[in-house]
Each structure stands twice: as structure tokens, then as C-alpha cells.
Image 1 (cartoon, one colour):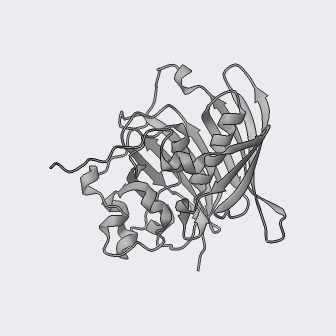
Image 2 (cartoon, one colour; image 1 turned 120 degrees about the vertical axis):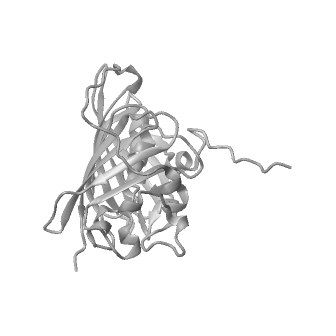
Length: 283
């Protein structure tokens, strides 16, 4: 009897969709239980959190697709209940702009703001096909020649629940840190997808830009690299199939570094770009 083949999850019916789903409590107010499945050690991943806020804004605004979204991470989020408050700043024919904040409660029951975002939404399917670019897809080995967390004899230091929900295959030339010999270059490249086979869409791109190991690892720095600010530009709706992500850091100074990410789809299109500022724990 032939071995059964797993059926990939569809957009809208995936663990990612269930764990980013928000419940509208009232106009502009949403509830969610942040899943522990998207944590790094005990901290909830910033890309997952951005996707949660992005989904709330997609419901609150007249346009469904994030074009640009900027988030400031104020305090570390934890798995568990949270409330999102949204506000429409301006709505137009082709773009609508809104802001949103995610709150949780401290031990005294007081609200603590975790993240604040400002975003502009539109309709990606309405954009013209004209492309003029000097950008080129990242060059790294095919997926079968790359390595993921499951390929190591022991769990990679710093890995956690989120790795079980992702399909990550890292370029071997950016894996020196995992072997105790970081290259000294602030680079990270990988094939990316969701573990259940769900294809990428604009909201999952918000997760993708923050899902790889920090470039700081290849600079010889270990430990948590918390995001201070993250801006994502979604350029087009991704084609089905795995994504390729390239992240670079050119400057680490004063205990902060930037990470510039490019996300390419299976049709060799640049579908998302991002820049984040992150704090590095030195010493």
C-alpha cells in the first residue's frame, strides 16, 4: 500500500491562520490569545506579532493588503490573552492608513502596551505589472543542499517552539555560528515556508522577514537580539512555493544593529523588503 502523502494546508486553514485569528469585540477592538507555538525561548516572535496586528488592521480598514507597516516593540510580549485597539487614520480610494496597539495585562491587572504600529493598506491585485529594478534574487544552494534545525545532532542553541512551525533550510555559508566558527559577516540566507505547507500570502510575509536566526550570530554574538523597530514593505502577492530570504547587517554600533531583508518568491519576484533596528546584548 503506498505511503500517504500529507496534504498541504490551504491559506485560511493553517496553524498560522488559526494562531493569528483575532476576535472582534467591538468597533476597532479585537481579542486574541497569543500562541506559545511562535516563541523564541519564552519571548513571542516579533514577526508573528506583526502578522497578528496586520490581520486586525486588515479587518478594520477598507483595504485588505498591507503595503507598508512599521512597528515599535515597546515591551516583550508573552503567550496568553491580549487586546488590540485599532484606529483608521485616513481612508482613500487606493490606500487606507491605520494604527494599532497590542496590550497585555501585568500581575496587577493593568494594561501594558507591547507594540504600536502604523500601516498603509491597499489592493495588491490592482497594481500594474511594470517592474524596473536592479535587484537580483539571492544566490545560494538548492534546498536539498541547505540545512535546517532538524539536521543537527542536537537542538541549535536558541531554537524553540517556532522552529517546529517553519520550514527553514539555511545556506551553509551562513551556518558558521552553529559550528562554533562564525564567519564575521552579518549575513543570513534561507529557504522559507510554513511547516504545514501553506503557501505564502501578504500577511505571512510579515512573519517571514523576522523568522531567520539573527545575523548577529554570524558576527560571533549569541543570545537574544530583541527588535526595537521593524518596517516591512509588501511589494506583490507571492506565487505558490517556497520563499528565499536574504538578510544582511552592515553596521553594529553602540549595541544596536540593522537587519535588511529581501524576500523572493518562486517566480523570482521581490515580494517583500524590510529593515529593523535591534538591540544586541554585548558582553
